[in-house]
Amino acid sequence: MKKLYFLFSLIFISTINHAQVTSSFSVGGDINKFYPVTFYDGGWAYNVPTNLILGRSYVHTDSSWRGSLMATFEYHVTEWGNNSEFITAKITPSNSVYGSHTNFIAAWKDASISNSERRIIIWLRGGSTTYYCQSNYAVNPVVYDGIQNALPYNEVNGPAHNYKTTIDEYATTTGTYQGRNAYFASNVGIGTLSPDEKLTVKGKIHTQEVRVDMAGPLVPDYVFENDYKLKTLPEVESYIKENKHLPEIPSAKEIEKNGLMLAEMNMALLKKMEEMTLYMIEQNKELKTLKEQIKNQDNEIQLLKNQSK
Image 1 (tube, rainbow, N blue to C red):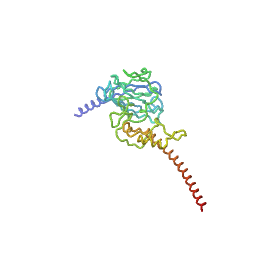
Image 2: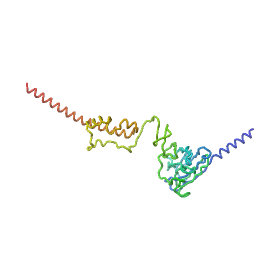
Image 3: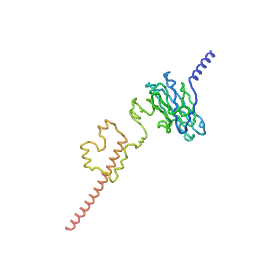
Image 4: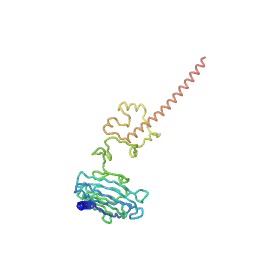
C-alpha cells in the first residue's frame, strides 16, 4: 500500500512539474529602450488563463546594481473576438535605492485582436538584460530587439509595434493592474460593466483627498485685472430674472442632462466669488463715501443750528 501511495505521489508531482514551464531569455538593444516581447497564450485551448511569472531576483544580474523585478501576468487573449479576454498584471519593480534601473516593464497589450496568433506583447528593458520566466503552459517568448528579430513587430492584420523610450502611465508604479478589452489603457469600470470614461464608478467614492490637475479651465484670477469688465449689478439682476440662474453657471436642467464637471464648476464658482468680492469692495467704497457725506451734512446742520441761536 505504501509503495502504491508513493508511486501515485511521484506521478502527481511529475504531472505538476511537467505543467510548469521555465526558461530564460535576454533582450538586447539599448538599455534605455523597452522592446516588444511576445508571449503565447498556452492555456487558451484548455479553456483556462495562462499564468506567466517574470523575475530577476538578483540585483546584479548582467551588471552591478542593474536592478531586480518580480512580475506576474495572468491573461486570456482575444483571438478574433473572444469576449473573455483580459490581462491582469502585478508589477513589483526594483527599490529605487537598490539598482540603477527601477522599471523593466513599459507596457503590455493583446496582440490577437485581428488574428489567431494568441499572443500578448510586453515591452521589456533592453541592454542585454536577462529575464527568467515560469508559466503553467508554454508561452514561447519571442524578442523583437532588432537583433534576435527585426523591428518593428507587426501584428497579423494589425498595427506595427516598435520599441518604447518611456513607460506607459499605468505601468510606472508598484501595484496590480487589470486590462480589459485587450488593452489596459481602455476604460475601467467599478460597479459597472460598461464604463464610458477612463474610470467610471457607479456608487459613492470615499477618500481623504482629491487632487485635480488644472489642464482645463483657467483659474479666474483674471477677474482682478484692471481691464476686466465686471457686469453691473442691474445687469446681473436682469440676467437672473430672465434665465433663473447666475451668468456662466449651468442651469439645473443642463446639470441634470450632462452631469456636473467638478473642475469647471469649481472654477466657475470661484469666478463668481471673486466677482462678488469686487462688488463688496465697490459697495464698501460707496458706503464709506455715503458716510462721509452724511457726516458733512450733520456738521453743516449743527453749524446752522448754532448760528440760529
